[in-house]
Image (cartoon, rainbow, N blue to C red; front, side):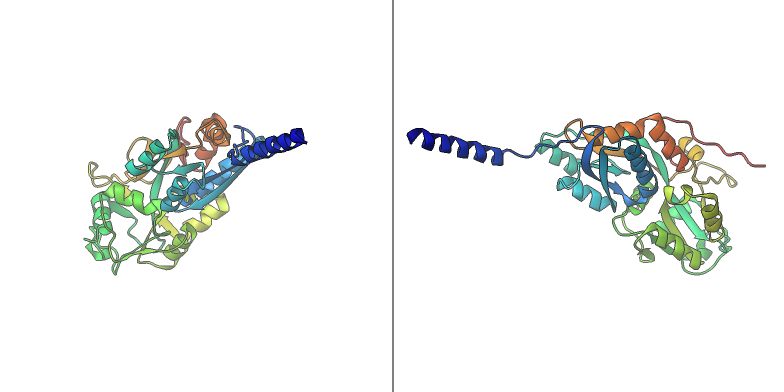
Amino acid sequence: MKNLVWLLFVLLGFTACKKEMPEQPTDTPVSGRVSIAADATLQPFVASGIAAFERIYDKAKIDCQYASEAAIFKALLSDSVRAVIAARELNADEKAHFDRKAIVPRYVYIGADAIVLLVNRTNPDSLLRFEELQAIVNGKINTWEKLTSHSHQGKIDLVFDHEGSSNVTSLMRLLEVKKLPSNAYALKTNVQVLDYVSQNRQAIGVVGMSWISDLGDAQRKQLESRVSIVYLRPEKYGEDRYFKPDQINISEGKYPLYRRLQIINCEGKSGLVTGLATYVASPKGQLILLKSGILSATLPQRTVHSN
């Protein structure tokens, strides 16, 4: 009887120890399931990359939530996701958070894209000087007639996808602007920005590059019939030197509104996030970025010649 009681205590103690042990992740670089978050402005090419990775590794499942820049970093700090795909690095407070947890975040640079400005197709002002754009975003210029061209009139409506979007934070950082003007409006999505600009001659829309470059021929023709892409002239260039947002002008530093893109991996081991990051940085993964209009980190940009 004493032996039976002793055995019961041993078994109960073993069960309690098992319950107290934290559940260990079971994913590998090519299998399992993991949650990550990606900047919504990057969704077209991120979704394509994840789909391609899952086709190759059919035992891998990546749950990706697309949200604002602010929301995805909040999810990372709350341990809701193990990695983010973003247009900025961790700030000092975020780095300190992972220092306290003894986790070393790993950065994988995957490419660069541009902040793209759009105007209504009927608006003749599709050329802007960099300093004019800076004055628009800081509120010093709020009507079209104040621009050098004087070819359009009325109030300027500056529209972007939503509050906390990296389209806005990146634009403000690149233009060194601290506060948006009263004529800046947040919608909800990049698609809504495209629709708003196509219906309003007074608008300047702010979108991510992949939302206009990752399109089929029919979609591109439809977009071009509704909106025009704004060309920018950096201060160091002459009167006739305006540059469009494309891979060549980003790589040569001629288009001024560009940003680095990276996967920030905080899983703390070699798991499924590591596998995805390795794939995206590989030639096959970089080709997906290239076809999406993003300047890839390791492959040459596409050059399209037309007569």
